[in-house]
Image (cartoon, rainbow, N blue to C red):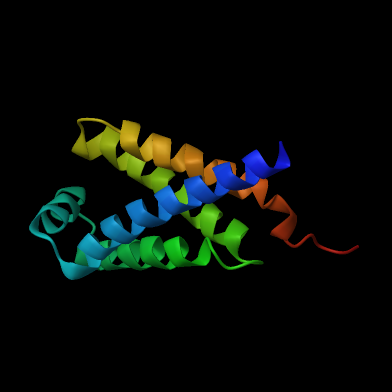
Length: 120
């Protein structure tokens, strides 16, 4: 059972890494669709770059022991923002962001022991 859990987490991290390297890379490269999307959001293109850096950085950090929970948490927050942007401004569907966010939340939960706890 433990081996199956390990393989499942590996697969989810691989899927998330591929998805966020692609999406974040497209944002950083300036793919026309991404530029248009962030124009619609209306906050400026700096936000596209910030989002791209977060996505690419987190995709890499998902594989670094001690930083996996931080990376997954950053992706969860980013996908919450994406869901809100889709529902409020962009349409038509926030389902892909919700699925990626849920998978990132699963990774966050699996590596929750990496989150530092304050000492009293």
